[in-house]
Image (tube, rainbow, N blue to C red; front, side):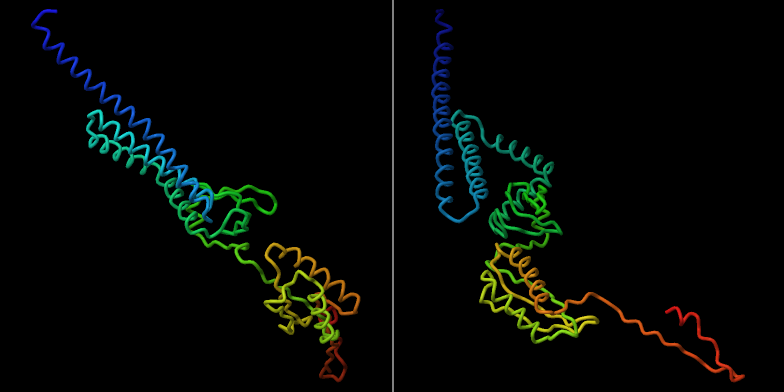
Length: 291
């Protein structure tokens, strides 16, 4: 080797050794960092799974932690190799802003999904009604809440729309009140009808003793006396108790001669006759005769 080239080769060897060490250090940081991020994410999920948090929320938190730790690991690896991370962060910030503006609606749904997971106005399996749409919650994702309707339709409702509307949760409380209006004919015995209603309620063991049921006359309608019947039932048994109660009331009233009237109107015909100036009676009004 010519003596004049020896300093250049020595400097090249030193640079190669230096960058080799930096590369190996960055590779070590990358491998250990990715393993640590995966491990910490798993530990966090195991800790949160022991709480009463929703599984979707736990998965989301675990994934977010892993993404953040992975980004930190890559930046640390680049920094160990001498790459200026300031410019990288500026580039990532600009790209992130552009992506955020392009995916504004999607990010709103993600933020709304995150809020739903924290606030928990409902859980998977609850029956809810939002914006006139009702169904059982089958899943909560980052972008949509999944509902199955009573007639087995599958609905994916955007989280942002769901969070902005009024949410009615029919499954949240342990019991629900059944509201019935029972019509009884004016010719029937009201006291007997009231006693029969109480007997039907007491005969159903699914109806709760507390809160106490209500049976009372609520209105004197045009064709009937109206009773309000308001028993309480466990939420899972609400519809079964309601259907059985209506059937039992009808059958018991039929057996005891209590009449449930249908809407009707009585028409009275009057023959209006008047006397003419000559003294002869005027013929009846044909329109009145047809009424």
